[in-house]
Image (cartoon, rainbow, N blue to C red; front, side, top):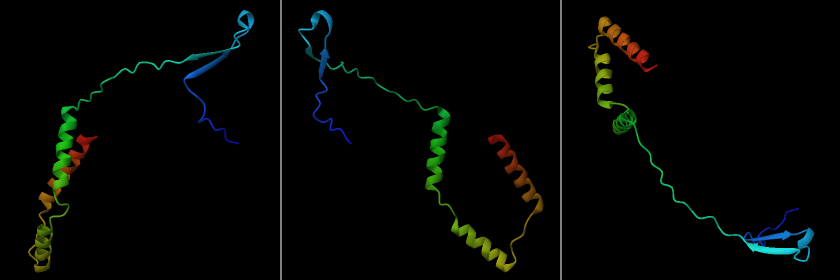
Length: 104
């Protein structure tokens, strides 16, 4: 069973007295609202956070796939011109792993 509280006046307090003030059984006193204090919030972003934000912006502007480069590599593979340099590949893998270590 729901109680309809829309008709209740939040600014009225009803007190029932006992003892010597029994003749004033119900006394209504208006509640005064508390003064509102305006607080100002501030946010400061660190230099590192700004760098991250700049990198994210640049990355968002870059295409995910360089289709021109993909087409060139596909054509080179199909024509037999694509050569793999094992030393360069190993160096790039080692550099990538070192970069990953620096991130953790």
